[in-house]
Length: 336
Image 1 (cartoon, rainbow, N blue to C red):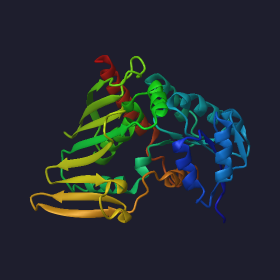
Image 2: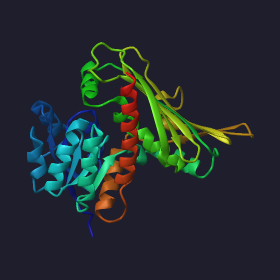
Image 3: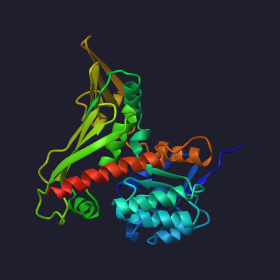
């Protein structure tokens, strides 16, 4: 029997929206049916480049189309709840970019909506769950490659080159919620432990930052098995871009070096630097990995639709990480 062809509507033609379409066009079982953006010129351009049938500015029109099976939501987090509701009302399956929403209250509503409508399969875009490098690291840690407890050092700083983009993001949500949900999920996933406590500090280093917002945040976390972690996120005109992902245990250390950050051998993909103790041995593991494997993520949703797999991560895992991000954000804002 031939594979079912799934028609997809993309809502939000920004950077992440394009990352989805770049992979979709190589998938034999998926067709881009329509693209939607508030800017019709952008939507028309995406329609032309990715051979969609329709372009629109009203997501309700795209979501209500009978010939659409799956909706990919790539808009700002504050719009997610409303669009999720419209998708479920129209009985669509959904990939929704993280975070699930921009605040705890709406997140609770979104979770309730998803759990009360199991006929609509929903995958929240925790793309690292489908990233081969992170999957390899998770496997190594879970097989006791570095022992436990684990110290996790995670930094994701952005030197702002697109001022309007980041100001819009800061009006919508904080760095700790927007990006932090990824790495809180990683903390729980790779160790198999639950977070028991978070704290954090933050700062406003730009005059244009919205009131009661911050553009630099650092959260710390304690986990149930004794592991600890920090996550640092800064969006600034003056901070240097940095991407540190390091996992340290009593038996060794694992450090991820992204392909784009390798000084040599970029053609080999990402690098996992693995150090063992007491052997004091280094092993270099190359992983030919796409940084944002949106095609694998979409196929994971299709596997859920066809009853071949469970959502990865589950909505309960998404919710747990989101709650801790919101808690850290609340603590940071209380100290501003």
